[in-house]
Length: 363
Length: 65
Image (cartoon, one colour):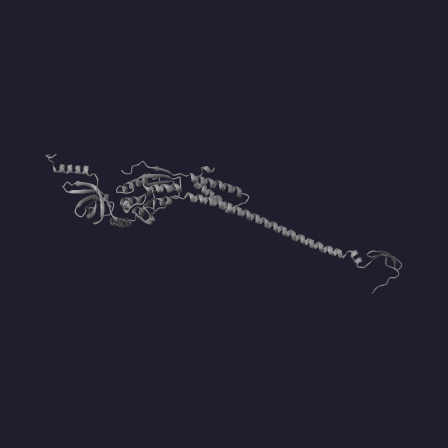
């Protein structure tokens, strides 16, 4: 090749082939400088450290996070020699790096998308009450996914769960999650989509602040629930989702009723019915006893009255008994009362026949 | 008859049966039979709850491309 003569076009082409072969995909970390967008389509900036600056080029479409001069980023791309013989780094992905840059990018994009109404609470849809078909987007190797499935199975059953396995961190994760969202939306046979990822560093979770992913979640025809990171982690994906769960486990809790609580409720219902029937039987027994007591009291009162009446009559009869009068010394005279006639005189213990000598008026 | 009903239907039916005990239609003479029916339904629903399993399918689709 030493004596080979190239045309400028061939030379640039050979250099580019060599660069492609040697560095098909390179990650470069540094600080953004001279950021600008031309014609609304092309993005130019330099990525630099204290000594060196690398000119970068990319399309607006590929820029998924807001950039500003001074932000620390990692860019992924391929080195290239332009037809003007200038070195350029063609970038296909940018990710903010470090707490300050991540926060800055998050706040800038949050404001932009918020102003567009992507996080409007009025657009949020409720979760289905009777869940039988669920779409899950997560990494099946992630601890958060395992937690979700464990809680889901413990709480409820009868759900057909379709799992789209994707990366949940790194530069490729947003596009994979978007493809999975599109897959479920195109088929339309799940009632809700759960996007899940367990805890991690701000850098690990930064893929959920991707603009295109946030837009895809907001545009989903099927309601989306997110369970990303921990309670304190808020991502743009969370803000765009219909429902935000604090963790993957919490997402499983929000999606399903608790079979243990339902069983307890059924047991309580049966106990309540049993106690109700017992109390109604007691009430009936008390009611019947009261009626019997009333009847008994009526009968006793009537008997008392009859007894009293009988005693009275006996007293009257006793008072009228001739024997009682005779016992007091009186006598009964029977027969014609006229001088010379014989009458019968009855005393308590004697009967006497006597002749009447004389009859005269006492008064 | 109950085996063809969904769990939700069984729970709804149990609620209906429970309401009868609180309603003016309640008759002590009918209560034992109704109570037996409620118990059977409750046991059936609890059995369903125990046996419910989720069907988990990891899609073959490759989302990396």
